[in-house]
Length: 272
Image: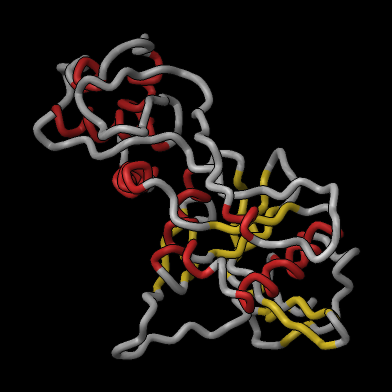
């Protein structure tokens, strides 16, 4: 395994099986991200509330995965293009750079490769993901192939991500809303439950608490004034099993994590 440090130097030949996650802290993405007129993919940077910093992405689908990581309360860190894996497969030297390394509070680290679903049937893509998966699983980490999530769910997450910057909100108002008994209340009722404050401010604060998951609701459908708030952990929908399309190069008893879209719906309109 090789890492690129913040000073530009490369640490090569790190031992994959024994290197701890702490080695990634002073590292930068392996590849240099470029922008040019006419390029087929859309690169950029996303301000991550998890990292309190910008994280790079090379496609809109990678940006989607960053949104899901940002929303997941179990995620503690996300590293883009985290390392270069090198190994020998079928007598040839192979190299692979995963898209993300996701560190989690209650689970082992997760290595993520982001691929559109239509590419997963290509033999070259299949082969690269298959051997990368075997290497990752061999050290007890999880491996995920992330493909397109449900459209409505993604639209909701994009909308709620606009409320991820915690310093923009009135903490006294957030505390007042947290202390109120809104379990079972609709969004409309929550938006109008604090008449001492401007409507726009209350609305923004309630949506902030949805993003931070103080409140949860069914976001598989378009958010509306009829959505009911609850307390508790968000529900997860059935995984889109993109990893099942990748053949294993040898039998493995280790479970493979696939994308687990969180159950959310669509946008809360301004006229609610």
